[in-house]
Image (cartoon, rainbow, N blue to C red; front, side, top):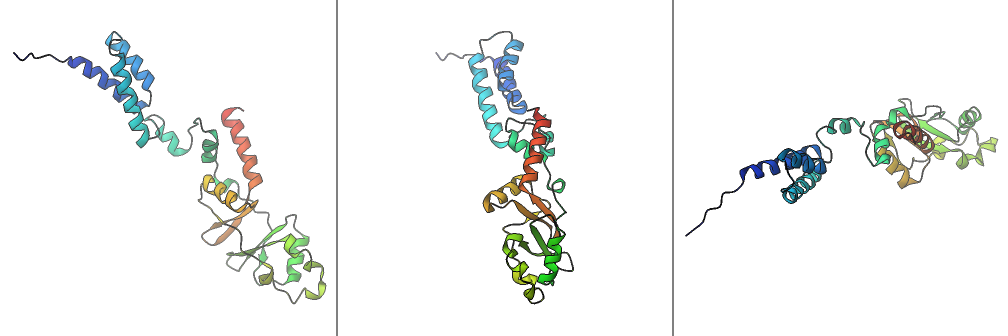
Length: 221
């Protein structure tokens, strides 16, 4: 004779509750012990652990943030165990643009370039046209020799001396993208553009300085 065993529906309910809590709040241990306390015993400990761990693993794969931290993460205000990524997410390129680089006219001669160099404390000069579009850059070390040959002041044009920047940073780039460009090029300064318009430069040293300040502010270290 076929025997019918009645399944404990209540157990399925509490185990399901643990799975929901674990997946939504990303808190598998809390789910296990809280539901165990609510159910009044630890006889369901193994099922609770299996369901909670499975739910957490599956949800974590598709959604890295829990329900109560997702909005903070989207704003870049969530401090996670990965402090580097968190601090870089907080930093914004518009706060790091340096505008004290003296621009050189695209149609300028060597004489005008020497005049700009004489009144600048930088060793890097952006070349811009009348619309303030970046056309190239000039490094002091690349013109150091020719700048002392006065007979060439009116014969050599800036267009003959400039070169393309190793990379450009867009005004809406994330700091992760900016750091990737610095790593790939090995440069210490990169021009910042909005479309084709020149805004200034961002330097690796200023990023490191800002990073350190934010790290101290957000973590206390």
